[in-house]
Image 1: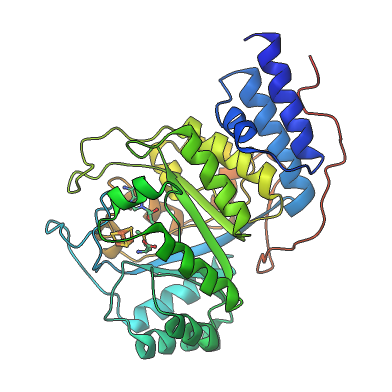
Image 2: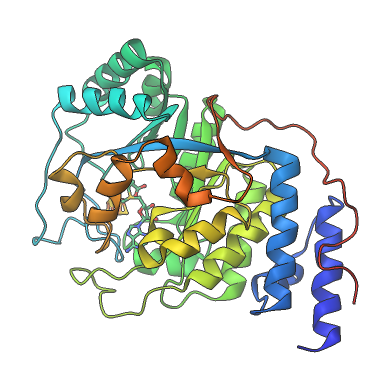
Length: 367
Ligand code: SAM
Ligand code: SF4
């Protein structure tokens, strides 16, 4: 690698650490960081910002995938309505509740209720579940159930949900349209704005490595997430599912995801950023590396057997998910052993505290 390349990365990292805004070209340059010194410097800078802005805690958010029914047809997802080859299920309310209690016993302070876009769960049914979980566990409740109306989001909020995950998937309008026929990126963004207005902590994010996606598109993802002031940012690699139109395309790489996580930490500073399940499915070691490149959240899967294997967004997530849910605190700790990190005990809300890493010079140092 030439000294010019390294010093270019170094000066962009210094600028980010000092709190200055990065432009699109600078973000593209960081996202393009190459193996070796460039990536080392990027991840080290992100790790310093993570430490200064969100500390050493890793927050556990336990997921329950409560319904595999979906009315949409996203081109990448195995749950798409037109995929007739998967087993659809809905988990009975009592079982959802007992899993919520279990995940609380296993150090999770938040339950994430996730599903396809399933109209069976109307406002009344879902509010009933939210209220019961709140009354019986006092867990923080995150919903991840897709696009709904303002009135529904409002009712869920009043029932006790305080967080909502809705990835924008890609900031490229054209790519979004091609992956979601009949839907527009603007509709997704409108939902994110409604959720913000209602006082939710809002999570969004994108898939990395989608066919036809460029590094400039990923830079636009970063700028969109920053511009919307998103509180939690989930980014994972594209994993092909054979029962979808994208089934024969190659999976996204773990390297681009790690670069993306690091850049998001540098640009958004105090957000909550998980080391995602999809990253662990491609390479468990890459998920471990995510904790050293900006991530501060882990989302163990508490969907009970046999359902977890049926929630087939992409292949390969079932067995690993089951093993993690059976883990104890020390089981989770294996994921970040020797990294000076500890499991967070509070709810892990975004702190919004002003944060400046102690070092003002770029990690990796000027060459
Ligand atoms: N249905 C809700 C929604 O779409 O917002 C929540 C559940 S959906 C399964 C959760 C996320 O899975 C999506 O936002 C998408 O980013 C991700 N996903 C789906 N299929 C994927 C694939 N093949 N590879 C990587 N991520 C995928
Ligand atoms: Fe349904 Fe969500 Fe999968 Fe799209 S990503 S098909 S909305 S479950």
